[in-house]
Image (cartoon, rainbow, N blue to C red; front, side, top):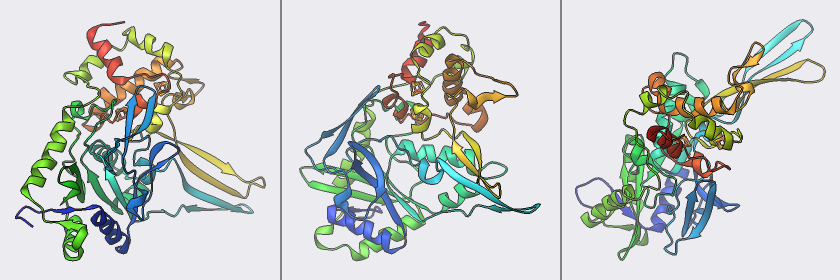
Length: 379
Ligand code: SF4
Ligand code: SF4
């Protein structure tokens, strides 16, 4: 190895990384193909990874494609962020049991398995940072989120082939992971072969790297060469030049605040189905509601927290009516919160440029196009 911390693994070496993590008590969650989509699942073997799979993404359009090169991280992001693992769509908060006139209330146990997240993209790292701010760094932290987050080991991956709806460069969130990971991988597929440059980002990552350096032999590892580091740096810089979308963020907060009555909100409302897809796939959306359920005898009751969406009529229901009864007001609320009031509330944009809301909107509504139209004065 040379003097820069890191090593180069071959595909069997990636299997060794998975084995080392599993032996250390981590359940590895990573990408796999199911029903024509890249989703997360428990990964025990590199054979489960999406080898040679790329994706084609555009407004309301997602298709897998054959890359023909065997790359296992050659796709972009699927519909799932990682939020469903740390901030489940449905979570029991407490349960109550009535005996006569007495009611015992029990807080729910927190399920916080040790998860190693394999293949986290830079945009999603920034989304996790946003959730840390929103959920863990507030006056009363979300204890369940905090427990899960502390039990998370992150293996980030540099994006090599951005999707048609990606705009992380505009948002300053990618495509190269720059912080908040334990290990980062850069996949290289070129005339030198198929390999992964692995570099640490934390003490835990250093420890796993040490273990790999001790154990990797034969066809699992290559001597890390400076040419590998140069090739890895090129992966990120080339990806940055091939974003499918862009968003001009200059003065964006003030632009949106100044255009609350812009006619483009009527235009987008005529297309928006208020289906909530954009909020469900968004890795930073965090709004919830609570549901109370009881058994028929009235002795057992439970309170559940469930994901909600600002696109539903009920979400803004207050004492007799909805504050945002029109689709126009709901889309405007969503986009303006993401790109303007989020900055006032949490200090950053609420959008990381992952493009999911564009790909998975059945009406192909594109937040970059809507904001672009407002900026250019289009109706
Ligand atoms: S913008 Fe698209 S995804 Fe979002 S609610 Fe409207 S139709 Fe659904
Ligand atoms: S608003 Fe859209 S592009 Fe931005 S983080 Fe959410 S899903 Fe990704």
